Image 1 (cartoon, rainbow, N blue to C red):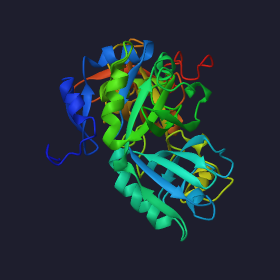
Image 2 (spheres, helix red, strand yellow; image 1 turned 45 degrees about the horizontal axis):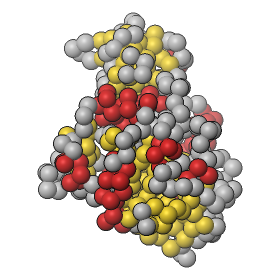
Image 3 (cartoon, one colour; image 1 turned 180 degrees about the horizontal axis):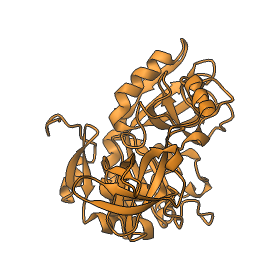
Image 4 (cartoon, rainbow, N blue to C red; image 1 turned 135 degrees about the horizontal axis):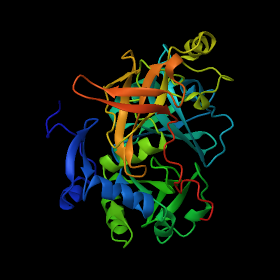
Length: 369
């Protein structure tokens, strides 16, 4: 484990300390897990609006035609038909079809691409792109030049529009450049909470100025990793290191809609074989019969005691007032509504297999902005 001095710090580290945030190691970074309480921060995001420091994420720029430069063959989603000013979620795979990382690709110009990857895998991802991009592609790692603040919640548009007059032109999963606090910056209508929200890519050394302006708004409160984890689990969103790993394929992880078999990509042959032969395991939702939550690493059993899988993520859901989570189970036991038990040698709890989309009342695709 890295020591305090070895952990990387975002440009907002001092701001978190000033707010008396509880800091924890996360993917090689020292990050705020909570400020005023995880449940309170979850509720404020669902009901009003919160800001999150996501500056630990990695950002790359690739210049070149997506096919000729090799970018399209590195990612699982199609890029050729992606309009300028739009973004698309997908994965990068190893030769065995396992997920090296999940990412979002932005088409910011006809031949210019902005890639957002996970903070813990940035260096691994960088090496993968540099290895597989073709001669002529221009690759640039701008991770430590780019701060990132996510503003999420039903009132996120109301708040951000007071700083950026024309941000209302953004539809879900689109992006553009806007003037904000004297800077020309990329803003996307994306997020990880299931609520209406925006992700702002700001100059690293000036990210503190943006944070202070946003947090000065009467409606805005900061939220940490704890609330973010509950929010993403309620929505059924995967997290690298939990539902996604290099020994797990995107088909097993329920991400088949983000895989285009109409083009070539690294790992495609393995996925085609999985499709043909059938999967031996599948990701499922786990809905507890009470407030007790499944926890990563716990086992999943049938009522007979037969072990059929393992929990990858879990939490108590304030929105649903019960424990929820995800896990991989043997395919023959993956039907929704099937009764199961999760736990360990110390305790076990009744649950049912369910859809991973637990929470469906968010403002994510709000059409009124």
